[in-house]
Amino acid sequence: MVISLPPVPAPVVPAGQMARQAQPVLGLPCGLELRPWRLSDAGALLAASRDPAIRQWNRLLVETTDQARRRIETMHERWRAELSAMWAIARPDGEALGLIGWGDIDLTGGSAEIVYWILPAARGGGVVVEATERLTRWALNDLGLHRLRLCHSVANPASCRVAAKAGYALEGTMRSALLHADGWHDEHLHALVRGDV
Image (tube, rainbow, N blue to C red; front, top):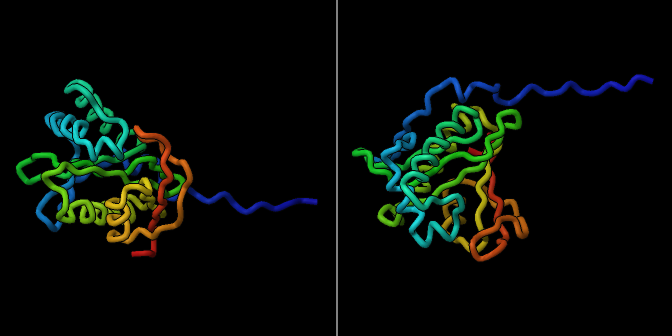
């Protein structure tokens, strides 16, 4: 008996598509822009690492200017390796106010997870929602991804509001899914798939 298997589907996004293009600068309706991180942005990474709200929900923070510069270099290396895509949320004069981007990029599987933080001076004005919406369009339309995730601790209602406003549906709770400084947290899993927007 011969068993016929279905053909293996081609990758959703061909390898090399991301790495062969320069990381774009993307405008936001509020007048800010999303741009690649620069070595001169090391101070913004240090400020984020010292902010209690950012420290509470984010890992991979830095302690020195040298560590911050190395982290920025790593962001560019990971773009070229098609593993992640991180932007600075910046004023037109260049000042970095936050970070947003795609981690855990899987071009073959057509998925990624959005991550972000914003410094206190830029909080409360809907900047993160605008940036999430803009990067969602980029990931679906320019990069060609299919499924996008947004995960956050259940104790972080601000991120839950960002997800809902940006159109990411709550799919469930992942138990004890991420280790924060104060221990393991359950996380909400939000997602958006091609066709939702």
